Length: 99
Image (spheres, rainbow, N blue to C red):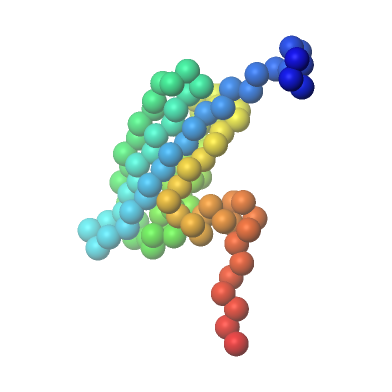
């Protein structure tokens, strides 16, 4: 065997893909949650408030995590095009230091 025990439980990973947007006309997001079996749950959400792109990206992450939890996801891999959100979640974000 190559280091993997037969007794090791298989972790069923879910995927969360998200992309939020904010414009003069409003803000919203698209969310796709993929089950371990390849089934997609797709959501398009329009927000009823004005928000910056960063605010939309954070709201999208929170909503996506809540939707995944409702779908009974326990192990979730989240993907976002927002560097700020990704780095803060990873714990690698460092603010710009002004001199």
